Image 1 (cartoon, helix red, strand yellow):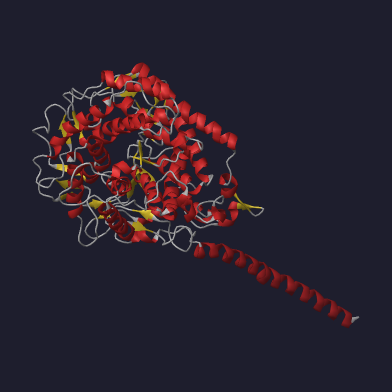
Image 2 (cartoon, rainbow, N blue to C red; image 1 turned 180 degrees about the horizontal axis):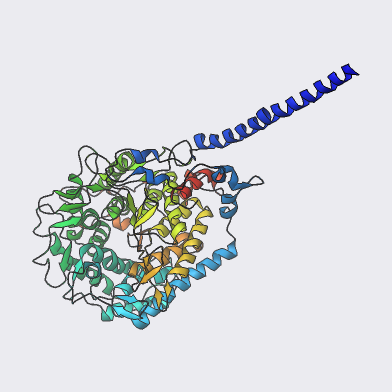
Length: 621
C-alpha cells in the first residue's frame, strides 16, 4: 500500500509539474512567438509606431515627441488585427469598383458642376465669382485695393465664365459652350482699371481663352462639331489684348523677372513691390508660348522664357534648389524656403509641360536637374515606396542652401506633385505621396491649407475647394487603371457634397474640423475640381479616346500636343528651334501603365501595411 501511495504521489507531482511547465513555457512561448510575429512586421515592413527617423534630423523648430502621441504599439494596434479570416480590409474596400457606380459618380460630378455653373450664370454673371451662400456676384474689392486675396484674382472680366469654357466642351455640352463663347465675345473687355496678379490673369483668363479658341478651330474636332459659325478668332484677339496689357510687368526689371502685378489700363502701379514668388514669375511659359505661336509674335514666349532662365540662374550652387520669394531687381532671395507647394509648385510643372508642348530640350534638362535636387534634398523616408524599411516618403520644406528642414508643415498645393510625377514617369513615388494626402482628406473630409505632419494637425484650417488632390487622383488612375483611385474620387465627391454644398453652389470651408464656411466659390472649383472628377469616372470621354493627345495647363485647361506648337514661325537668331519629337509621355495615355506590373493593376497600388502606416501617421488609427 505504501508503494502505491508513493507512485500515486509521484504521478500527481509530475502532472502538477507538467502543468506548471506548460503554463510557464508552453503558453509563454506561444505568447512570445505571437509578439515576435507582430514585431517582424514592425521591422521588415516598418509599421512599428515610432517617431519618423527623418523627424529627428535637421529640425530647427518643433518637438519631435508630439509625433508619437497616441501611437503606442499595443496589441490593439497590431497589423494582424486588420485581417479577418485572412482577408485584408484595405483590399476588400478598394480592389473593385462596379460600372454602375462609376456611372453614378460621373453623373454626380456633372450635377455638381452644373449646380455651381447655373447659379453663377443666374446670380453672378457678369461678375467674376459667385458668393454661393448669399447667391450674389463678387468682383474686385474697390474699397480696399490692398485686399490682394480678392484683387489679385478678380479683374472685373467675368472670370468664372472664361475659366470654365473648355469644361463645357469636356462635358459634351456644345450648345452651352457656344452660348458662353458668344457672351464672352459680346461682354468681356480688358480695358479696365483693375490691378491683377500677372500669374492669375495668365493661367485663368489667358489660358481659358486660348484653350477655347483651339477647341473652336481644331480641324480634327475630336469632341464633335465644336466649331462656331462666323467665329473670327475673337477669343484669340482677346487673349492677345490681355497679354499685351501684361507685358509691362516685364519692363524696368533688372533681372528679367516680372513684377507680380499690373494695372490693365496703366501698367505696373507706382507703389508696386519688387518681390515675387518663383511660381508666379516662372509659370507663364505655356500660355505665353502657345500665344506666340498662334499669333506669330515671339515677344510673349521670349519674355516668359527669359524669366524662367533668370530664376534658374539663381538656384543654389550647393543643392540646385530655388527659393520661394525673390527680389526682381537685385536677384536676392527674400525667402530661402524651398518646397513643392505655394510659391513654387507650378514652376516645376511648367518646366516639364513646356518641354512636352514645345520640344525645347533645355526645358527638359532643367526639369531633370530640378527633379534630381528635389529627390536629393526635399524627399525624406524610405528609398522605395512599396517595399523595404523606413518611414513613408514625404517632401518637406528646406533651406535652399543647405537642405535643412525649415518647418514641419506641408500645404495643400503640394498635392499636385504626384500628378507631375506621373507625367514624368515616376509612378511609384507618385503613389506614395498621393496616399499621404488622401489619408489627410479621409481624416478631415477636406485638405487643410497647411498640415503639420509633426503635430498631426492643421496649421491653416481653411479649404477653398482646391483641385490638386483630384488632379493627381485622375492622373494616377489614367496611369494605373487601379480602382483604388475611383474610390478616392468617390470619397472626395461625397465629402464635397456633404460639407461644402450650400444654397447656390459650393462654399469654401473656413475650418476643416468644424466645417464652418466662407461665402466664396473660386473659379477653379468649376474649371478644375469638377472637371477632373468628371473625367475620372468618364472612361469614354473623347479626351481619352481621341487619337489627339492633350495636356492640362496648371489651371486645368485642355490644350493639344500639336506639332505646330513645336514650330516657330519667326526666326530665332540665337537658338534654332528643336523640332525633334519629345519622348515624354502625355498624361492622358495609358502607356505609363507599363511601369506598373500586371499583377498589381487590380491589387492595391500601395501595400496594405504601408497604407496603414500612413493612416496612422495622420491620426486616422
